[in-house]
Image 1 (tube, rainbow, N blue to C red):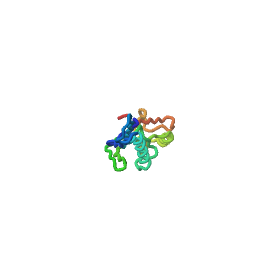
Image 2: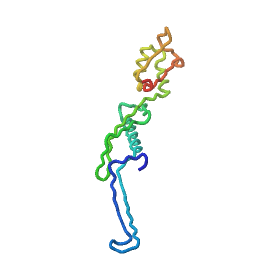
Image 3: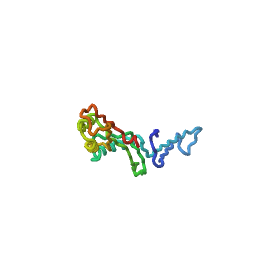
Image 4: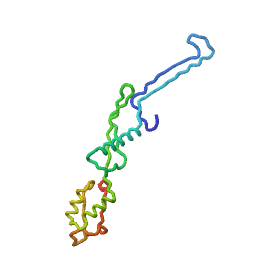
Length: 167
């Protein structure tokens, strides 16, 4: 087996023996050949991980919960809870997988936000930002004695924070 292969169950063997002299014959020398062939059902861990990743990607693309801005972070966590081998050597794996998906904001989205909150009150800006796809929560910090955002987008700074890294 290759290093990423997992053997499932016990191997089965076929044994064939042949001799160059028939049984019961007289001979000074006899050559006996024994061929042993073994087979065992097995699967590739790498193949399972690749299939799981593809299925997660497909599920995410079809899910109504995730939009186009979400991207998978890292590699999925894959656990095989049971393995069954059926007649003909067909292997059934019960696999669970977990992955983290995060929304990735484009520069044009951030530019649009700046345009839409310029001159706004903090309450209006918070309501707008918190309604945007992928935003888990927004915080606003305005300079002392300021009750509105600047009217120039060059004076508005938006800082994106990865919520997963703050936990």
